[in-house]
Length: 99
Image 1: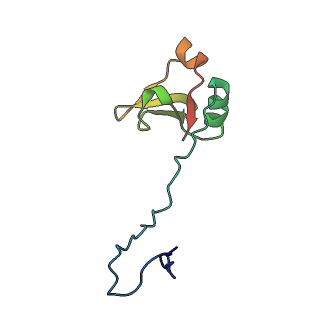
Image 2: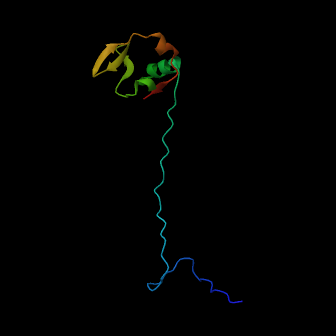
Image 3: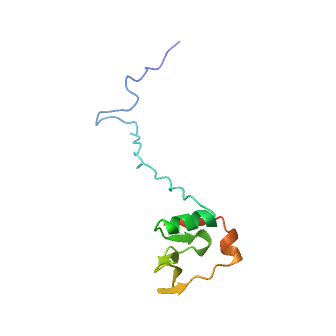
């Protein structure tokens, strides 16, 4: 029974080879998105008291945020500072983000 010759190398290396050379591209390291830790309203207020800014996921804009200014809870909204009147949605929200 005739046998076909076994290749000595899995990938041809010489310039006279008739087999196609398959190159495997090295993919860059994939970056996993950083998990955003959410908190509830009391947690958000603890962060504000500690001097942090807070926002909500539902606002989808980190340029809208709250912080303490001159002892008052203020919100930066459309480029202006406003007194923040807390509502039930704020109190019950579980999507607060400390920024």
